[in-house]
Length: 235
Image 1 (cartoon, rainbow, N blue to C red):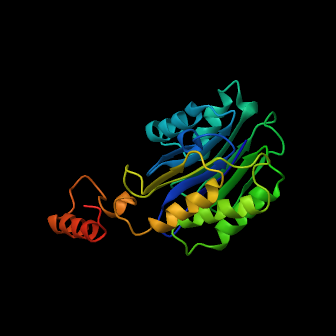
Image 2: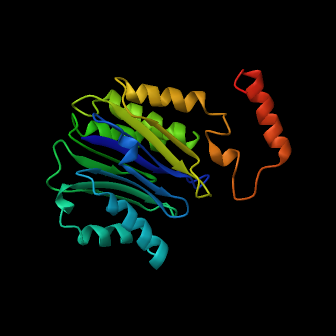
Image 3: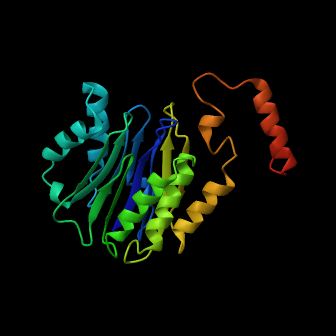
């Protein structure tokens, strides 16, 4: 019922997920992302604790992303209905598609990404996402993920259409680098791409650019940003 691209940026260490589906608010249910650990897209008959428990095992036991996810899946009685794409902070990539997920379903693992989907037109969706992601390492990760999502949609995507889409990216801090959602829109993927483009230089949307840690930014940064908002009629 969903397709996603989970990716790792080898230049910056950023990790993230972009996802779309023909249902409400996919960004609230599929991405599980933690800086310094991993990014997961948990979908199909999604069990959120696949994401939470994988990240917890990595944090508490020092496991790699694939090691932790394999342990969590082994203990899940509903694993045949699950689908997960994962990348971790060391660049490890792992995909899983249960045997009971709705066709067409499957995943493709690239050098630094995992494309996964179920209830799709066909496998060309996951192939196109990974191909585009791997071909464009020069892009900032949010743009790269969303471009891959668009490529998957262009060759088929969810066979029911689209309704919601999201992108979630982390860098070095717990606060997300970018967290954007389109919860109900007839052209959700294009709308997500528009939001990513128009907010690309907004330091409050890409929060890690404005507050990259617990220390407050310098006062001059606040003043400069307030002046910018005033010039736009927003303050």
